[in-house]
Amino acid sequence: MLQEACTRASAAQVASHWAAGQGLVSLLRSLEDAFPNLLGGALDSEVSRWENDFAALKSEEIIRAYARASGLLQPSRQRGRPLAIRVQAEEVLKQLVRARGETGSWYAGLDWSRGAAAAAAAVQAQRAQAAQREAAAEEAAAEAERR
Image (cartoon, rainbow, N blue to C red; front, side, top):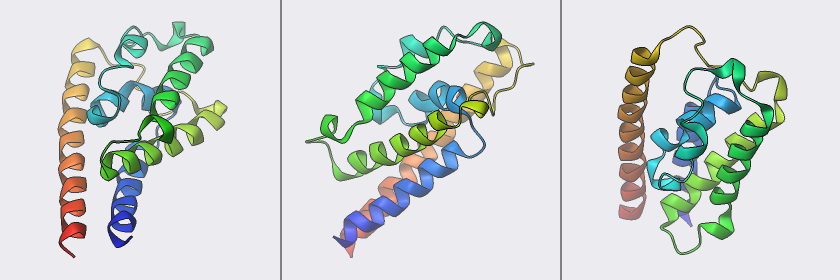
């Protein structure tokens, strides 16, 4: 029980840090890079078309990507996976649900002026941050197991 509490606290912290200041579109765009172990590339085809043309993005596309992501993150879809992954999926889902409810700020956290090179650099930085967060979460889970 202590292990789950520690894992949940760590996952909640990581997910809230990831989501801070970001709207739904930004969260969906960065989800695969930030948490590659959760969806396994299932969302890439939905959001890769968005690139930096946010003005042409339709709300139906956003809702479709949100529905796909939230469906894949549902607890019933996470059965049989390690505790850390299940808890991480729950916490990420909470952040997506929160962002979905804030329709006025779906586009928060997006840089409308940057070009493709800057976007690629940002993706690389997000991947490095994701690897650091994942390592920290695994270390916290290992520490909880040792206790």
